Amino acid sequence: MRALLVVNPQATATTPAGRDVLAHALASDVKLDIVETNYRGHAADAAAQAVVDAYDLVVAHGGDGTVNEVVNGVLRNGSGPGVPMLGVVPGGSANVFAGALGLPRDPVEATYRLLQAIEHGTSRKVGLGRVSSAGAGSSYDRWFTFNAGVGWDADVVAGVEEQRAKGREASPALYVRTAFASYVTQRRHPSRLTVRIPDEEPFEDVRLAFVSNTDPWTYLKDKAIRLNPSTSFDGDLGLFALRALGLPTITRYVTHLLATDGNPKGANLLRRDDVEFVRVTSPEPVNLQVDGDLLGVCTEVEFTSVRQALTVAV
Image (cartoon, rainbow, N blue to C red; front, side, top):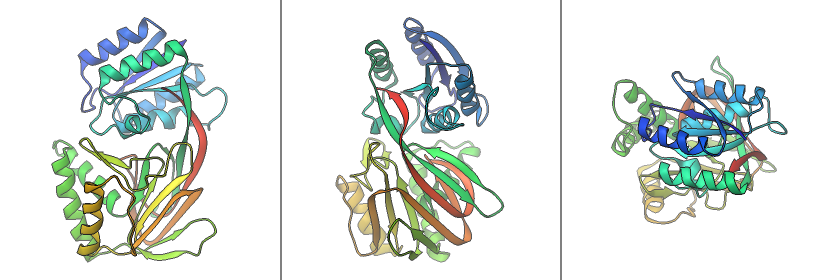
């Protein structure tokens, strides 16, 4: 088996020693090549070249952003025959995709699990989401592995990326502070989204829309945040959208999500757990995030489910 190991040396939990241990372990079972990323999009480019070079396996070692890039690289020309199997060794702070797959979030344990999967030939097909957006002078076409969204969550991602550019660590405390600041801005200048899903009338004046490809939506340290508990890699997309952002509404849902294992309900909540697509439009440009990375701004975006898009070593 030919394998390419794509390492993001800047990821939160990625170290040179850990990379060397992973590489040595993999090299004992496969013919291994290694790429260390040094620019945004490098992982996607390396993974796309791995398809051209007929690699059997591409292993992403980094955070969810690295995994997302590798997935977008191997699927640059679509899913189907000739696409390498994906392996994941977490090296970030949240590692949502690995957690949703039931993989260890510890790099050493995940490496052992990957070696076992290679030895025994165990894998699974996973569905993915695809984002197509336009407006505000830009257009995007991107795969996502676990979540995407417009509105408040994307504003938080944008704020955190701005702080990280200034040298601050992407800690839970930074996310909480940024979420509060973004909430204040949303209250002053609320989004006015229109949400469309199959076989239903459009929902207007929606304030935020989160789309999930699996459960959980994300992690806060070790706490799973579950917006659409019935959504999985084997089904279609989950939608969590709010029609109001008043303090009582937000307090209710935040308290519920932090205190329980999900299944949120309420009059201001538009929630669906298994839809083929979600289309969101906005009269003003809004931020768009995929898998925790800011993609840009848009006025129209469609999230589409693609079942069994990728094979993952588990």
